[in-house]
Length: 441
Image (cartoon, rainbow, N blue to C red):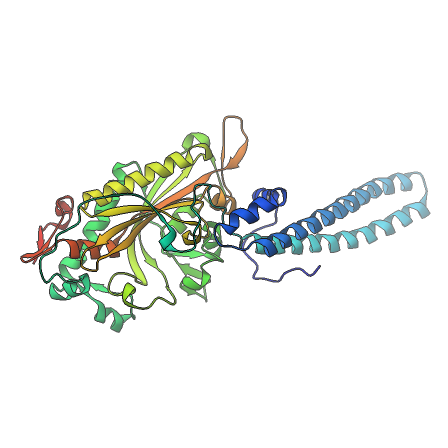
């Protein structure tokens, strides 16, 4: 069988954790294919390759083990033969060990190649969706879980946020094009202060909810990208600094979760709760049209992220807790909101279950996504080798979760549009201590 060629992903051999995924695939092949189909991922061919390669791996490993054992036995015999004066037999045994060494080297290289090929396939297989994920292919198939807030009654002549930004000199989209290109706005005056106010508001709320604030790097190495699953799935959507082989982060999820790469935690440390502000960078290739106007879709934007490392038995309870927490944020900002349970076709590569938050943009008359809260179960932890040890001293994979809490651009868009009055733009009460002003006028 020809081994598939692919970029060498930054993982070691298949010993340890990746074997757990491989074991599950080979023992539950049809179930894996069926569950992947819920994500609209046709896994028949790639799973067949994985199973075939795993069989080849096991056969090669058996050959390698047998020949290694034979060589070890011969090495012990050689000394005995020399002591007994059996020079010819000892010389023949030495010649045989030389042949075995060459054969073992060939088998060892073959095994490494097979394991790398398996890794190349495994990192291309998405996470399995949770049983509660609804079937569907597009955003229209997502299920509305609950809604809240009061729809604004806008004054006559209300305009979208890009016109408000120009009227009150808050955001300069054209200047951003001059400096960098489309999707890189320049915030000015009260627009910049509103950005800073929201960042501090979200960080303070997260800290009060028990999250430890960290300030991560804005670039990561390839191992970090593969660890959280952005690579290879989203490689074309990430800004890549090719000389240094570093990637600009699409979300603080990547560096924050990678804090726990190759770490064995004590069960008593769980849950670990981190929050981080970062700028986020996304190429968003192929994004055009009216739905991406203004702040609706940017290449650089600000976001506060929450991340948890949790015991597998408690991760879905934690997911509910995180969704409820994000709900408090949109309620404090006095925005109309709804929560969606994403269908299989609208979920990310790495997620097992995701809830999206949307706020209503009154002047645009449309819902805007402002947060995703996801449980990745052990998928990221498996790639990261993020483990914990319990009282029984056994080591097992943790579960990872994260959520936007929150992404700023569409929050700003909704705040500007929904709070416009003839006198100016009203600031929600909870934000006033952070902005230092009650109106934008």
